[in-house]
Image (cartoon, rainbow, N blue to C red):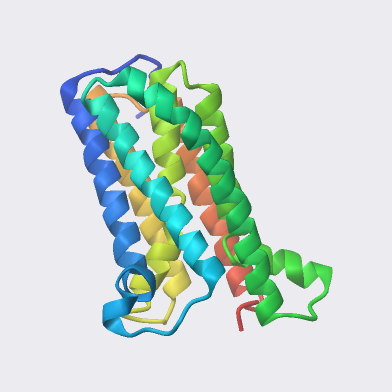
Length: 235
């Protein structure tokens, strides 16, 4: 058995609907994961959050909504609108990355104020720092490949998938805390495989953008899991 690497443009309506469906599922997972502590906290009575957490939540929400709108534009053949909004998307991606790094740094400082540089580095990985870097890298590659739609859309979808671990983590601990990190890795692998399976079913081939993006997403989650279990810097 072998993998065929496809590099053709797939503009079939069913393919566009598939991407829109996956994008909606990803958005719903992110909403569900942060519903208790952010989106629905006013009704669920969870603890107060800081101003910067509000900012982080608003920026991430804006990114998810922008992604959905961009996918919808493509599904509706609004290519010109998609390209115009893409400029704002590139700027917002930078904000997502910078604010994400800041949030991780604040979390490390709050939980381990006197840690040495080695522990800080390990904590950065355990607090999803590598995952955030993979997100930024995938978005950058997607922007570079923006004139090759078959690459661009797959890289952007993998970038969105890469943001799921924090949401998955919060959903998992609603049911169990035992092996929660490992379960999240399993869910991320399943998410990547599901995207590849849908793409393969449509085109009878695996596109290199999905192979590359999926490999980076899975590898970053494995590295994060190792960091989380190596002395557990969150403890």
